[in-house]
Image 1: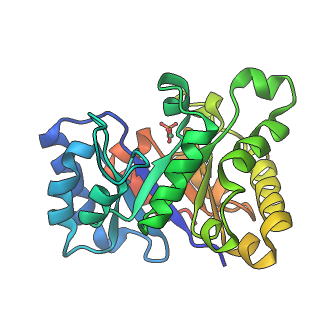
Image 2 (image 1 turned 180 degrees about the vertical axis):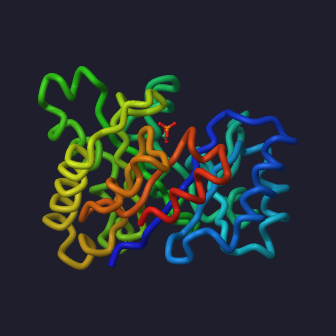
Length: 252
Ligand code: PGA
């Protein structure tokens, strides 16, 4: 069965004092969080080392990075490697968020390398896909999302891809307050699962976690998570408010 995952993508938000306060607020809500869902936070990389220490005894919140490079080390000024993340016990890393594809020109080949590098170092990639508004409106969004997945993930082995978390995030729903309806999201999630099943087999199709992102909040999480093929959420804005994030965890 697919694991239920709730990941908070803090993006480039919060100064250090605010970020530490948010972690403390989350920890205070420990008893209220859903124990059956894996809870992940992805803060700015400059906070990861300190948070790794704070969370060392609080294993129920996993740490994730928002990005990394594919090389282990070397002359790549400004980049962070999977080896460095692993040395801080980071368990997850977002790959190919639409903001990185759009603002930093990340392409399929790069995303495939990053995904593979993370898997090689035992870090779970949260691989993002999703179409822009004009792609949705021109009605080729299904093919568009399938291509994103095939190009970046289909050179992996069955064992490797079963460890990847796929996040479907329609770009038109990110940070806009405009959520995909549960039916719109389920349609793509089911397609992704079917495509992965056709390529890698039933077992992988059943086990892979496919989560939804894009203006997911306490008010709509229940309906989204009730869909057959939606195994959780990648949450931006609502993950910056401890009680909202906690409430979303109880929407499975
Ligand atoms: P949002 O962001 O929840 O603020 O729409 C989601 C994401 O970009 O991962």
